[in-house]
Image (cartoon, rainbow, N blue to C red):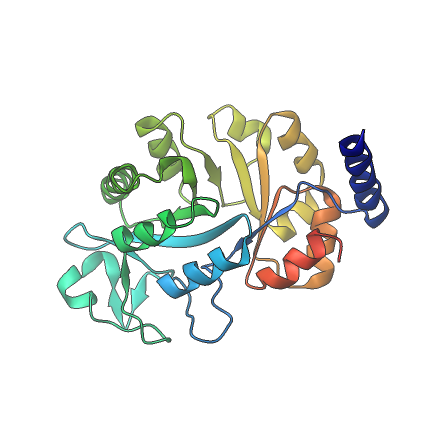
Length: 254
């Protein structure tokens, strides 16, 4: 009886605030907007883990010699990652003084807190062959690290999304580009839409359409409080943000 009362009370609270109890927060490139951190650094992952939010997003590239590294942009220190060997990249420092992280080291840190999802974005590369090579290497690294159940995948490249599912049909994959409806993605067995919030502001019916198809809905990169509230009230499953502490307060009704 006590549990029933608590559940009823929580449902009433979320109903009054207009915010979905299901909306969860993902730190964009880790929790980097704080002291001692930097985008896509291991420190940013640690700090995201400390927040006890749903997950931490990060970006993966393959070097010219097939090593996987974590960085958002295609270039770092004027070097194009996929055209550069790891030996030339490994000592580059991020803004917090940390070295550019390899994926293996990043996943080892991720495994230390299994409750924080690892939202792994594979960046589009210059050729299908390179994308396929990197995707296969990512799947192998995730399996080797023992974080398969903890990892979710996203990409702007449809080729990468399809290749992920070909290599691991059980993988949780969401598409980022914003140009396809949930119905179109469902036909390709893509499990979620992960679109810029402006896409869903223009196509609000896609949220319900995705949910009816059993798909997840994420929005990025939402840093404005009013938009965070708007998206939570619209019923999205996840909000990816550079301001995870603020988003967490909003989705929890504070």
